[in-house]
Image: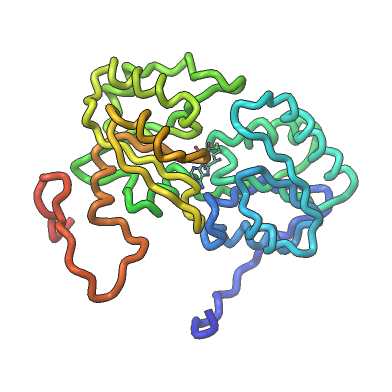
Length: 283
Ligand code: SAH
């Protein structure tokens, strides 16, 4: 960025000893860190990070001790309490503690639980939101999470509950009827169950679905499929979590908006993958 003008002056908050900042690291690409996240990474003595935080992001905190606190989905999560108490201990030891979580800490990330434990123990906290995979990850696949004429609402769901089972408490009928676009986190393990629920609730077998794996990283892979074929397509593709699964017509926008690999002078693309006419010139 040497050609860029300097950033405007701004008073950045100080990460004081004895504090814990719960911070979203975004979906992977370090460029999606917020300025507050970078400010925190530069000041921390200790960074406690999850499995979904990319190694490249830890390089932004070379001065800090890096502690891995990973849990993978479906495994027993008894360690959650240990992680929260570790944060308490580090804060009480006078460290400047940065708790770094993938995406946004308050989106299917247990950030709320960790924050509760800290507050219960009298530890002062700050929350730094991050770009959630269900929004930013889809954007990196050229899929707008909302698109005028397609959806006026979007539902974010988790594919499994705390113990790794398919989420029994979700009302798939209501979600299917009420939300044109459904964005599923942690959906790979129970994809057969989830698609059956959606089809039983009336969603079409031909409904477009995208599976976006390790979104925003150099390893990003995107599978375009349908509700009727997703289970077989995931099996034959060999795709692995982490993945965001997007169900709905907005997936078709990728045919036009898949921006990775775009080049100057490329052929114009058909603007009308949804068959709804060209976007209006004015708002
Ligand atoms: N707090 C995180 C979500 C944690 S739950 C956030 O806001 O993004 C973990 C799930 O998030 C994964 O199973 C996957 O569904 C999704 N996820 C997180 N990072 C991802 C990535 N880079 N690519 C695809 N999915 C991702």
